[in-house]
Length: 344
Image (cartoon, rainbow, N blue to C red; front, top):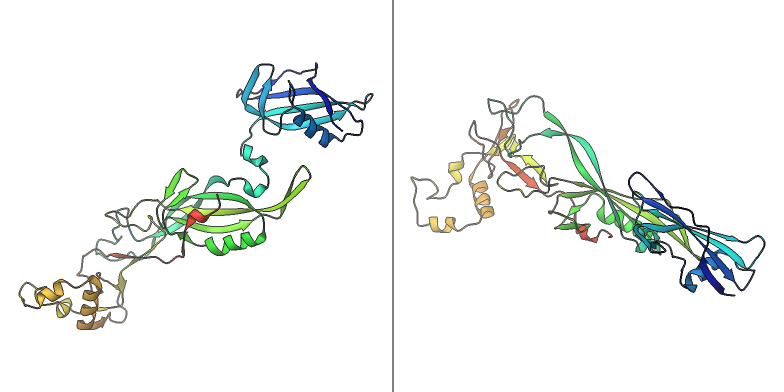
């Protein structure tokens, strides 16, 4: 069983072109075989392999016909029909058409899980309570107190959607366990075009489609499509004015109903202008944590009177003087994962 000849058909319709200048072509070949019992699939395969002066294209070959070449129109559909009066002769028609939205040449790569991941962008709208302004300052009234009603503001952020075919449900389960509710531990090089700073990307969820199937010749492939939805923060470094909008860390205002008493009671000699001591050199070399622990031991814990409002605290847990602006402490509260392991 084999192919005797492959030639252009004399019946060649004209191309059609849309208003965007994208063209669709239909090209026909007359194929002669040496066996009347060919099937259409095997005939198309053997006719392509036969080659010749006017070869039949494979899937995703760009359009070529008698000196014309359109690099933006691709062979995507084939029609194979046996002649009704001569079983040795066949008519093959290839339709070349432009790439449609969301379509890629890689869509014809087999097996499907070898195809690259696809990226798209969505957005999510949310309402947030404001405790800081854009410069990182605590929002308080003219008396330096918190407002009775929390300040809420509508906002939106970008969401990157990544879709990738995988072979098994085990892979799906592993991705769900690893990335759900996690933030990027280090720099994330996303799609080769965007780099997210640490902890600025949050994987909202990982989902999978029902099982799908595609055929490639005699091979049948079954697979799942995994979808990652990743919400992005502002991707700016904290800089001079830290802000809760920069990363997925929690920014918490330092205030409470208990505080450390007189700060002077825990100060080392030399930390107050009127005191000096040879021991000052020892305290001058202590770390911030060591200093905090020393002050905590020296200072007495005091409480806000019943019915009173929480007081603002400084970085050592002491009550801030009236009128001073509160400070925020940032806590890394989410699981951190290397997002560069998200399938590409």
